[in-house]
Amino acid sequence: MEDFLPLGTKPRRDAAPTEVCASQRQSYDVTAVPGADGVVFVSFSPRPDACQGLDGPPLADVPIVYAVDTDRWLILSVQK
Image 1 (spheres, helix red, strand yellow):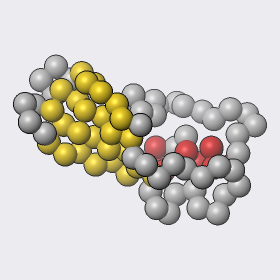
Image 2 (tube, one colour):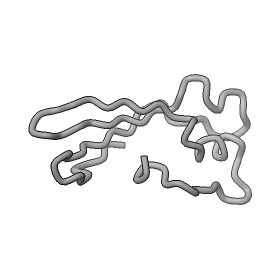
Image 3 (cartoon, one colour):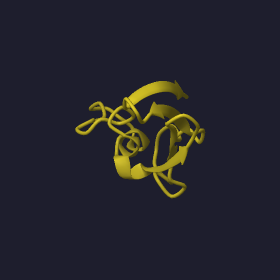
Image 4 (cartoon, helix red, strand yellow):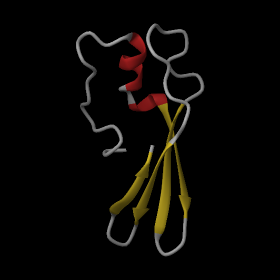
C-alpha cells in the first residue's frame, strides 16, 4: 500500500471530489494471492461503493496488481 498510495498523500488544491476520494486508502479493496517461488500478487481495486455520485472523473475499475518477492520484500512488477 505504501508504494501504491503513500501515507500523507494529498490531492492537489483544485482536485475534483472523486480525486479527493481516490487519494484515501479506505477507497480501495486489497487482495493478496500467493504465487510460486515466494511471490505474492497484491491487487488494489476501487471499492464498489467508493466515490459514487461525486463530481469528477470516475475511478478506473481495472485493478492495479503488484508482484512482490516475499523473500527480499521487493516489488518485481506493477501491472496498471
